[in-house]
Amino acid sequence: MLLDKLKRLGGRHWWSVWRLRLRPPPGLFQPVGDTRDDRYPVLFRMVHDCIGDGPDRALLSFGCSTGAEIWSLRRHFATARLRGLDINATSIALAEAERRRRGDDDVSFATAASAVAEPADRFDAVFAMAVFRDGRLGGAPERCDRYLRFAAFERTVTTLANSVRPGGLLLIRHANFRFEDTPAAAAFTCVLRQPYRQRTPVYGRDDHRLSGVDDEGVVFRKHADRV
Ligand SMILES: C[S@@+](CC[C@H](N)C(=O)[O-])C[C@H]1O[C@@H](n2cnc3c(N)ncnc32)[C@H](O)[C@@H]1O
Image 1 (tube, rainbow, N blue to C red):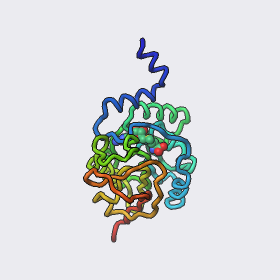
Image 2 (tube, protein in one colour):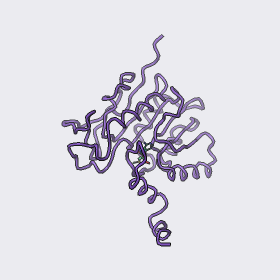
Image 3 (cartoon, protein in one colour):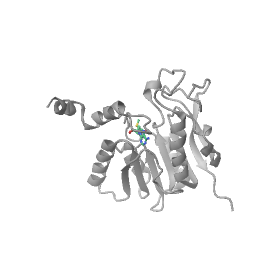
Image 4 (cartoon, helix red, strand yellow):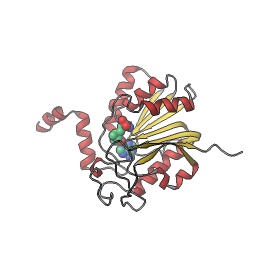
C-alpha cells in the first residue's frame, strides 16, 4: 500500500530509474533518463545534411530513454526507419506506448544494454547522447571506477561502431570517456568536435581522470569500404 502511494507520487518512470540505481544491471551507464524534445538540433540537422532522408535510411538512438530523441529525429527524418534501444524496460514500454498512439510502423523500440543484437553495418547514423556518463562523477574524482569503467564503455561502444554502415555516422555526446581511446575508432574519422557543456570530467583507459580535456569528439564518420 505504502509502495503504491510512493509509486504514484514519483511516477512509474522515476521509480524505474531508482530500481536501476539500487540494482545496476550489467552494462549500465547513466541511469537517469533525463531527455527532452529536439535536444540536439544542430547535430540532427548536420546528420540530415550528411545522409539525407528516405525509407532506405536507418537511424539508431542508443539510450533513447522514453523516446523524445526518436520523435525529434522523426521531425528531421520524415521517412527513415528509426530504432530506439534503452536498458530501462519501463522507458521502452512508455516509448512503445507513444509509438502505438502515433501509429508509426517505421519506428521500433527494444530493451537492450548494447547493440550486439543489431545487424552489422545496419545504420546510417547511430546516436549515443548523454549515455556514456554518470552524473555522480560531476565532482571530478580522480578515478571513475566506482560508477563507470572504461572497459565497459569500450565493449559497448564497439557494438555501436559495428552497427554503423561504412560511410555512416556515429555520434557521442556528453561522455566521460573518449571514443578515440578505443581500437574501434581506427575505422572512423572525427568530423566534429564540441566543447563540453555539462560538468563532464574525462577518464582514460585506466579509469584515471585526464587533465586539460575541454572538448569532445562528437561526430565520427566510418571509413567507406576500400575497393
Ligand atoms: C540521460 S538519458 C539520455 C536520453 C537521450 N539520449 C538524450 O540525450 O536526451 C541516458 C539514458 O541512457 C540509458 N542507458 C544507460 N546505460 C545504458 C546501456 N548500457 N544501454 C542502453 N541504454 C542505457 C538510460 O536508461 C537512460 O535512459
